[in-house]
Amino acid sequence: MRKFTEPKLLVATHNQGKLEEIARLLDPYAIEITSNKALNLPEPEETEDNFIGNARIKAHAAAKASGLPALADDSGIEIDALGGAPGVYTADWAETPNGRDFPMAMQKVHNKLEALNAPDPRTARFRCTLVLAWPDGHDEVFEGKIEGRVTWPMRGDQGHGYDPIFIPDGYDITLGEMDRWKKNEISHRADAFAKLVKGCFA
Image 1: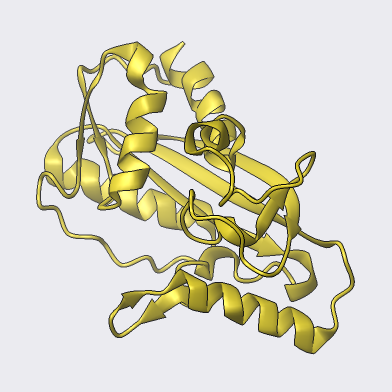
Image 2: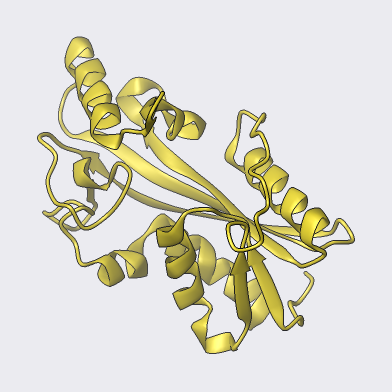
């Protein structure tokens, strides 16, 4: 496994919340962090039907365009009663002509579960795949997850995406009700990051 030895890392995202979360996780390593947004890099089209494929597209496109090592993630929620949907299409369920509307997406999840008369607990998980790519084409892949269940109605305004309907195993509050930095300690992204750090930074 290749170790990360460069002084600068590009985080392949335009999402400020995700950038802050990743920067905080990498804080101990004194690496200069930049982003697609800061460098005005375009978002490549995500054409794969799995998290690894889409994270690879984003990481390699950013590394090639910038000449820097690039870290990308692809993540989403899988709901068992919906056959694992929305999965890789998690963000697509929120798309509208005016941008992403996650309350609408969560309503869609609830409506589909109700139409199926899905029994409780409505088990689900968030998955995160991280790909660290170098400009020479090499990459390393790390996967994380957090198990739990979906609930209704939406609760909390601390998180983002589908957090207000997801209760992690061992808790009685949603990720949307949880302190942001507490969530970042237990999340699917934290799980993948622990593996990334152990593999490439430790």
